[in-house]
Length: 220
Image 1: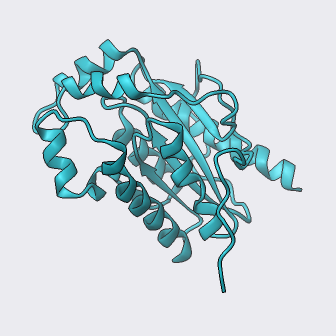
Image 2: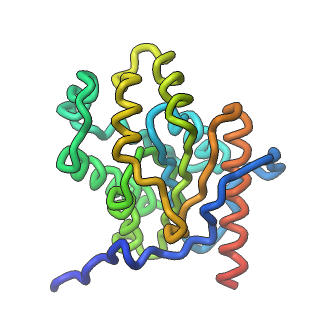
Image 3: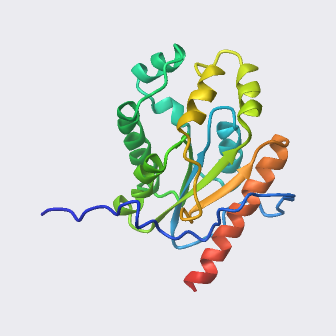
C-alpha cells in the first residue's frame, strides 16, 4: 500500500519554542526534559565553530537523552572534501541528512523520549529533511536550536582548533550559503554564542525546558 506523502516545508509543525535570540539566561534548577506524551528531536544547528557538539552533549546529559554527533555520519568522501577545503554540495549532503534523520527516528523507536543531535543544517531545505521525522515516527516533534555568532568570531574559534577536518576557511564558505532561520520557522530557538560556553549551555537548556512546558500547557 502506498504511503502518504511526507509534509513539505510549507507545513512546518508549530513547536512551542520561539525564534527569539536568548539573553541573560540563568541556570535552571531542574536539569531534565519535562515529561510529555511526545518524543522530541532536538537538532543543534549552526555554522562551524558555534559549539554544536559541546552544547549538544551538555543538553543530552542534562536531559538524560541519547546524543548523535552528526559529523560521524558523513561519508568518507565528504570528510575528504572538507579536509581539502572543498565546500560540500547539496548532492553531498542529502544522504547524510537522511542518515541523521533515520538514526534519530531509530533512537525514538527504541523507546527514548527524545534525542539530541548535531547538524549544521545551513539551509532551510536541509532543515526540512529533518522536519519530516515526525512522519516516520508518529508523535515525534522536531525542534531546532540555532547557534550563531558573527563570522569573524566563529572563524577565530575554528582556527584555534587542532586536529579537526574543518578548516577556518570553511567557515566563510558556510556563511556564503547560510540561510538563517526566519520568523516562519516557528520550531527554532535562536541562541547567540558570542558569550561563554557556560552561559550558552544554560540558556539553551532553560529555553528548551520552557518550550516543553509551554507545549504541555497547549496539549492539556
